[in-house]
Each structure stands twice: as C-alpha cells, then as structure tokens.
Image 1: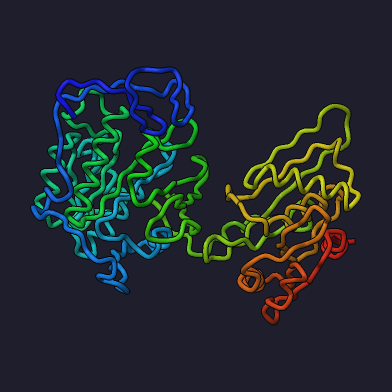
Image 2: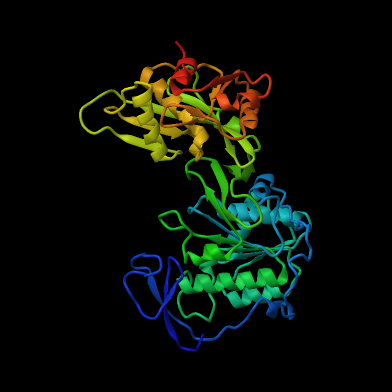
Length: 453
C-alpha cells in the first residue's frame, strides 16, 4: 500500500471501495464504510519470520499424520478445540464484558506453563500489577508464565520472534495498534492489521496464538467481519453474568467439530470445569409440576439432559403473547400449530412461554417432542410422568419422526435414574436394554402416554 493513500473499508465485510458511500454494495450494510489512511508499506509475509521462502509441496506429503496438539489440562476447553491446541493455529475468543474471557485465558495459560511450556500473556488493558492480582486470585502463578503489558504490535512481534514460546495470548486484539495505520486502536484497520501480524507470527513460528475479542451490543465480535475469516477457530464464551454457569462453544473450527461445548462454573477462585453438566442442569428441577419435561439432547458427541419448561396462560381477548428462550422461536410456533390442529389443544388465544432452564440453547429437531409435552402438560395441568425423558422430531401431520444418537440419549437418561424414555418408534430398536423405552408414532399417542392421569 502506498504512503499516504486513502481508502474506504466496510467494517462488516472488509470490502475496499474507491470512496465513501452510505451503503456497502458488497454486503448491503448501512453506515459501515470507514476511511483509512496508510502511512507506510508493509510487505512482510510468513516467510519473513523464519527466513525461508515457502515452496510448493505435494499434497500427499505427511499424509496420515495427525497434528500433535497441545493439551491445556482443561478437559472442557480441549474438547471444544477438538482435542487440544494445534501448533501454529490462531484462535479468537469472544464474549460479553465480564463474562470471564480473561479469567479463562489466564487459567489456560497457567495450565500450559505448569506443564513446562513458556507462555507469553500480552495484556493490553491491564497494568502488570492488575494482571498479577488476577493471577494471584486464581492461583495462576508460575515462572513459565510471563506477563507483558504492551499495546504496540511491533514490540509484541519482537518478543514473539525471539522464539521459545509454547503459547501466546493477546488480551485483547482491540487494544493493539500498529504504526502502519494512523487510526486509533480498535478501529477496523488497526484490528485487521494487528490480526494479520499475529497470523503471520503464528504460522511462521508455529506458535499457537489466542486472541481475546470484544463483542458489540448485537453479540458479535467487534471489528471487521474479516477477522473471523482470518483465524482458524472462533470461540464464544456465553452465560448470564448474574449466574455462575458459563458455556464455551465453537462457531468455527478448522481442526475439529463445531458441535462440542464446554461447561464451566464461575467461582471466587476462577472457572471450574463441569464434567457432568446433566446433573447441574437438572439439580433444581421441580417434581410433580406441570409444564416441565426432560430432554436428552446432544451437544456434539456428548449427551446432555436439560429441562424444557412451558407455561400456558388462561384464555383472554386480544393478541396472545409468545416468549421463547433457549429454543428456536419459529420451531415453537410450528409445534403450537400442530398441537392445536392435530392434538385438539386450544392455544390460539392463550399466552405461551417456553424456556430451557440453565441458559442452555437447544437447536435440534429432537427437542420437538419434549417441547410439545411441556406445552401440553401446562395446558392440561397434568404433569409429565415421573421418571420419564422424551426426545423426537414432530412433523406437521402430527407424526413423531426418528432422530440420530438414540442409543446415547436413552443411555444418558437411564444413567440419571429415569425409568422410562419416550422416543420415536423408528428409534425403538436402538434403545439400550433397561432404558424403559416408550415408542410412539403420533403426537396424540405421546401426550396420552406421557402425561399423568
């Protein structure tokens, strides 16, 4: 890029335009074009770190060799990454303010340092004494963990290029700045250029880098959308700030599945792994109350029991209210229509509220049957049978369709003492012995067998 050249970049998609305009023609977003002035050229590449130019290599080279991952010592964190950190990878961790991103990264850094790896923790938002206080509170003190309070990308790059680092953490990418861009830290150009420099260092030095990113009020990572395309893995740390439960999920992972989740509990001494989330989600479930059903859901390869709650109000004039949390609102609207048309439940003039307890998000068709049972239970004031879990997809004709992982779901329910498990008739052959399988083919049959009385 030539010295002093001005260009206009979309903060949403990263597209470059010849001049300012109100709407980006590439992504259609309004008021996202920002002006950038380049003051110096920067033609560095990944080869400039190692001093060896890259050359074409056969795709068969190294075939069958799985990457040797770095285990962090936090099983839940490694699960989400696909088994550990891949050398040379760059990971972006986002989440709401105060959710615990810095706490998570400091604990991961301590675990790696405790196992003998040198970790560089770049703190751009806290002084050394502040970061030291946090590490002391978390018990994350180790001579292999080095704190570096710096916001200059050139200074950080100089430290990384010295080598010998097992892991580099940048907290946060929005606090970094490079002299190549005259704009303020956190602007579109600064975030993009600093992320590109970290990517150059990660790939060239084969040193994994983790970037902490702020999120906007819409819940997406601040900065250009291009940032998420540049990195190898994007993790979101979720949870209600007033509750102790935290969930780490991957929305992008070049080296593993995006279906796994990690469950943590925030305590005074930091984040603690929840190795048995089903027990946590069902710990306060009321018994003998209408509107509550248990769903054996699947999060990646892990079965998790969650409680689906529903509350149906009394009939009244005016527009009924619909409030949904934790499941797809469109899917709930479909189920309400099926319950009214196929099962004869009057719901058109009644308020309906559906919630998944514990702040968990369920996004799979297998949750249909549990949601339908919870709504029918609240509407008819008849509790779901004690000791019964349910899963299955519900079609528009009122049929209950088969879903995957039926054996794991039923086995998880039986493990936690559920005497019976309602499942689609097409999955009955997959149910393990002793699971108390109750196979159903129609929604009306499920309501008849699933509710007490």
